[in-house]
Amino acid sequence: MNKIIKLGLILIAILTYVEATEVKISRTDKNGAVLVQVDSLNIGIADWIAIYPKNSNTDWANVLDWKWAKDLHPIRGTKYVEYRGAYRINNMGDYKVQYFKNNTFNIHKSLPFQIKNAASLVESLNYRSPFDGFHEIWIDGFTPYVTAPAQKDWIGIYKKNDDNSWRNMIEWVWAKKLNFNSLIGNRESLVMTLDGNKYQSGVEYEARYFLNNSYTVEVKSPPFQIKNAASLVKSLNYRSPFDGFHEIWIDGFTPNVTAPAQQDWIGIYKKNDDNSWGNMIEWVWAKKLNFNSLIGNRESLVMTLDGNKYQSGVEYEARYFLNNSYTVAVKSPPFSLLDL
Image (cartoon, rainbow, N blue to C red; front, side, top):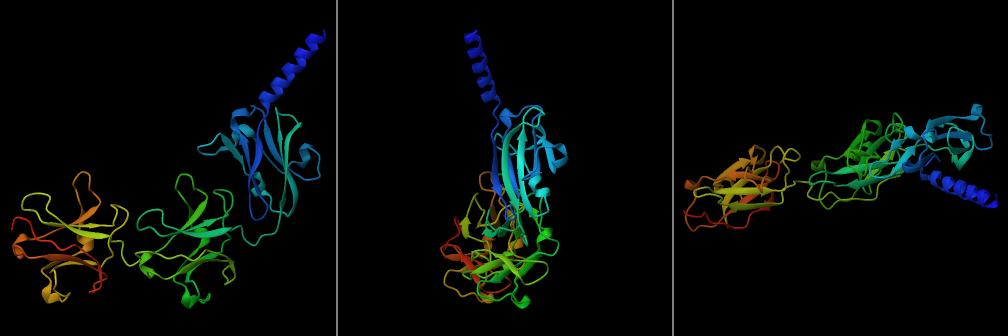
């Protein structure tokens, strides 16, 4: 008999262990709302999760929000699912998230949290450049489909030491108009895309989050600089891919993503000539050029040269000019046309 009892106790212990489900707080937001992660590998078909006032008992009448655990949203790339019910609690106070096994009121896990007063849930602003030519401010603190900025919160970009006057604002957006980041692994940042043409290289800027259509700053970004703001062009090089073809390949732009500014242009000059129009041998608006069709190098814009305009043995340069000016952003290495 004692052996049977012992075996029964061991079996119960084993079953209890197998059914144990990991439930933990994964994030606490500025106002105290929590995200709760549950290990999906050990969820029972009738497990459920709910929010109660902190000092209440488990009576159904005290449930403020609940969900079947099997219906929780999966977290991409992990074994966890996520419960976001705390975000539905608007009143300040003390609460608890409680996890129940097998459609009972037996508490498997209890996690306390407190909803506090917060003017805005925004936590941080940071400058990011995820791809060549992209300049973005990522705004953290909000949760897709759950929380969003207030109707009249806005974000403005300023030079680091300028005050908040409207005249100093470089560009701005209503925070509610922004979308969440689509990058895998970071889908919980709102994204403000910046116009790189409005910024100066070497100058420090700040993104500032303002509350309720005011000049009250809730959060500032760390200072940042936008590199190559005037143009994304990186290099110009002479190429002769086939007999009789003479080309300038322009690098720095990405097909279907980035392109030269409307009035950037490229001119060809003899090596030591100045930028005077009279010295220009041939030219083109950079925006008129197409990307290289050669397999293995499709990300160079191509300017085709007229070989009849050049002299054998003479060195030339391709020069990239900004905004219909004679301001040179990039020069090619000197070159002579092959086989002239």
